[in-house]
Length: 207
Ligand SMILES: [Zn+2]
Image 1 (cartoon, rainbow, N blue to C red):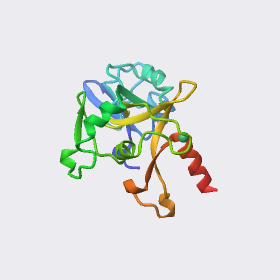
Image 2: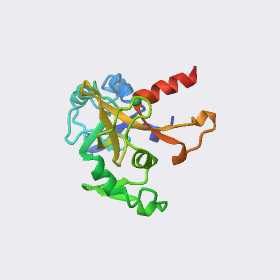
Image 3: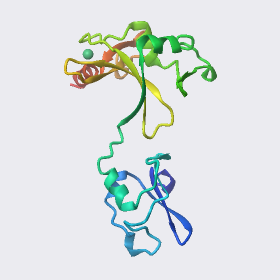
Image 4: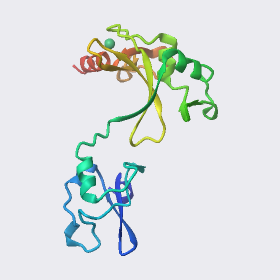
């Protein structure tokens, strides 16, 4: 792996010189003992880090000592979603309806409280033309959450249903005819399905 492809980076200062170290994964960083190889340019657990970035996105708003960063990242979950606002189905539909099937990439961005969202995604097309209900179990998507993964720059909307226990269930667009069986990526081949039913369908097809 080339150095610049490593996704986790820390910056720090030694004698007024800004230095950086990169790691392929956060796990690699957590498992490294500092100072590294007794190198005098290596940070120690007491070194205050200037920045900690993952996929070029800062992980913290303030600076911490390296040892503190290690503690903070112990439970780091890269699949975790950062969430901002919640929108009703009607609000979301209203905002994207004019660009839902727009083909010009320059015209598809919709302002959702200061974040530009690509309004013509095939997921929104599926939910807004085929309905928000899972075709298998019937659970129904109730609201959209504006979310992004830590490593993403832009937000998108995720549709959620809530089950009887009060847990959120992500709604997905399912390929009616799976891609592995020649199904195409087109609205005609999509249907709304909750994540649980979609995973169960996936497992069945693999049998
Ligand atoms: Zn379902």
